[in-house]
Image (cartoon, rainbow, N blue to C red; front, side, top):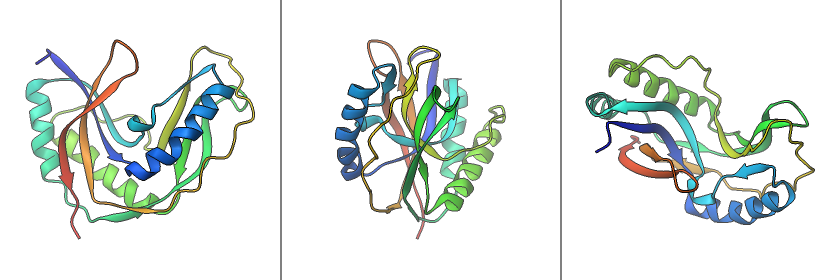
Amino acid sequence: MAATVRSFVALDLPDVHRRALAAHLDECARLAPGYRWVRADALHVTLRFLGHLEAPTLERVQRELDRVRATRFRLALDGRGTFGSGSMPSVIWLGIGEGLEACRALAGAVEAACQAAGTEPDERTFRAHVTLARQRTERTRVPELPEPPSLTPWTVEDFVLYESRLGGGPARYVPLAHYPLGD
């Protein structure tokens, strides 16, 4: 095992949604090559980015996440948005519609568990979204993009602790543990 593990906690998208978004992402990548478009199999809603953790801290995080109690909830992706300058955003994303408050509550419980495990508090305000693309170089304009496909709401049944492996191409996300939600 590496000296540290780059990790995060997230909600997965259903495979049917990933498949529906794959063609959309391919088309957007063709129209906006100045952005790094996320592979469909890597799409997720980040609840808490942990960064590089040493093994003992990661083990404490896993134990504390086991104690998180939350119920299943319905989640729906909403319209596209951006972070950064209007015509030259740094990030392009899909927002959350239905289930936003439940998602925020789960993110708060995950944050509390991570702090109980000894991680520093996350300074950033939680903003539920699915990252679609990141700007490759500063001041790249985003062209007119097609509307994302309409996706049906789904029931979130668990959350996942991931390892993020960098190098040799796009990041690979390896699930370390799944945490089921109650009824």
